[in-house]
Length: 353
Image (tube, rainbow, N blue to C red; front, top):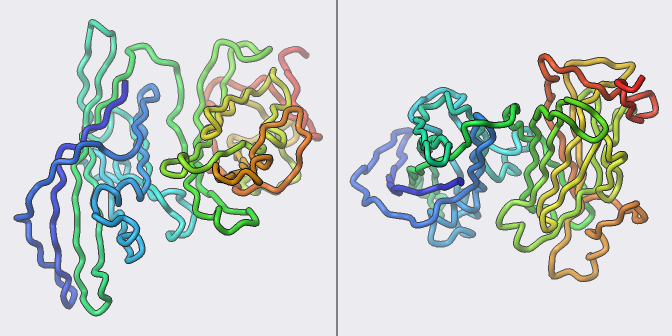
């Protein structure tokens, strides 16, 4: 069970004059009922992902006006440790700052001051910590150099079973690019991440590492839009257009082979792709890069419904709306892949040869 509880909201008003910051720390604390963001437990790690809009809705009476005059998230710190490993990153990391619309922190429970308590009745461990979220709102009058700061203290609790599947921490994709033809679809909130998990079997394979890639519509976009996973592929370098590639999810979200990849969707707002670990035959490397494309449609736009329709085997072909690319994903340290990708991009179970 995952829970978030917002303890207090402390508002600090700072006046910036001639390079000086004057603070009034006597602001009244405010209790907020529902905390923003999403908290996920994965083995020994915690993910905290929170869109800016969710914070604006809590912090400001008029979120849209706040966004238009330059409200911003200054920082999100997990625990009291000032280490950069405990500091959330703006997301997507390699996108221009104007297109970074959320913050993401992925930390190990052994970092950043987590405390652990065992519940012997449920055989679970509750990890506890807090996050300090600092926001700023410039004055709507350009001539007045005043910045209002707001600080949230969010209580984080994560329940994890004592026995967990061996996995690596999630790595969020570094770049999300709008490539569609309809400008009004350009501001949709998406996220994508990958992690590795060791499975005793997968498809026709025995013990193997499985890459788990999750692409999701984030709130509030998930309430107004549908999404269909278009395709996913891997390359040995960061170039998504590289000729050497392995397209394990073909157009319209169809897997190339159930022995090597699977697709799971949740209400057209989230797609989970699982692909057995692999190696390019003529390009051995300790890293792999993943790329995905998705189609997005407004729920109220019936004319675009076919653009987001599932079709396997694929019989529809049209341009995608968003392209997503990961950072380098490191190979597993000890377990080598059984799947090899030939020069034509086709997978082969090497254990059968």
